Image 1: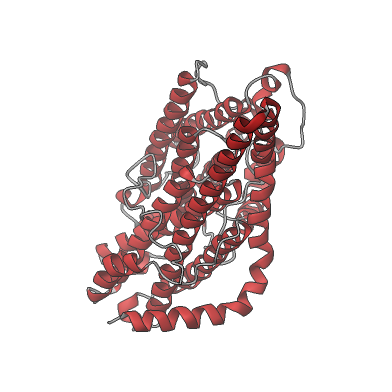
Image 2 (image 1 turned 120 degrees about the vertical axis):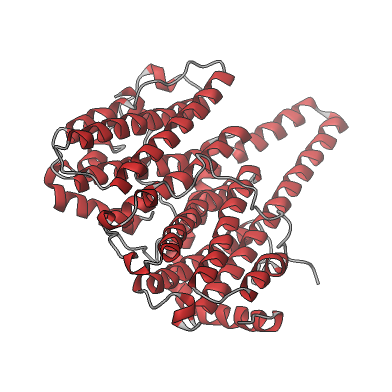
Length: 273
Length: 210
């Protein structure tokens, strides 16, 4: 199984075109994420704090106030710029995830694990969700006046995807690769959401990170059944009377989501030119 | 955990356990009641929000404790070992979450939140007394997990401080994992259109008043 850079580019482009039609159906949901984020920004008083600061500075009078107001504007611009970088990196991670899931879906079913219906359904559902995530991040970028990110995170491709793809021989290898991507996505969004300034950006990270964690939880469960040699137990609903007690351990060993797998915040930003 | 999935669960809950499932819990604890008291209207909104999520964590700890006790008595049938393992692990996670929120409250010179959210606790008590099967129990804790997930997600968007927001953001995915396992046990498929956590079932600060 190979997935070189040219094929990634072609797939990304194809996926983007194909998704245009599908996007119309989910536009309302994506708009809601962004709009509710903007409403939260208003509720949180981001704008009013800036206005208050500006009024206070003007009341102080003179050039000092002018300089301070200019400084405050510069800080706001810097914060928005950092948020755009975070969102573009997030969109780039989503592009990678979409592409890898699309590739997994067309592998030999004995390799991808899609001989199991639950696995096949999972890949289809998750591909759609990642596509919606990419579009939500891009909508938030546009709201901040930034440029949409439609390309992949190339560092993630080179350091995680390509080595993972080279190892694919069986369903467990596919699951390990997409689980690594889900872990990275959730960790990145927890980290990015903690440092973002814009309320709409925070809202996007906060509402998407747990979904990636859900994907990871499901993949870890599925992986466990393949590892046990009993993929037939992957059913909906799960029959817990047939699974070992250990399978009921919570999907993560930690009480708090670890962020070690997070990407560099500027890794996927759109480079001018 | 999405709106569609959530609705599916609520429908399933109501159908499978009659009037004792999660639907009743959420309906009874919804934000329709706008009663407020001085105790929650004069406090800093960030501290109020932190106390709210702490009260939901205390509720989760208490509910899992009671659920394990009920399952141990065998009145609902023998619980699968995997479900018992899950409940024990989830209870520990929620205790850690409660401790984290109380540490943040202490940092702000606030007393800890040691009791479950009073509005939800009343309904949980009623529901617990009316359960018939292990699946009913799973429905109940799933409801608590979804409320906690949504409340943490909403909290992340409302807090101004970096540390509290990071805490909310790092807890929400854990609750999502709990909910995911329970949903797979109860037979809920992943919804392709459910790519975002909703907050319509998040707890409201008014619920701190009972």
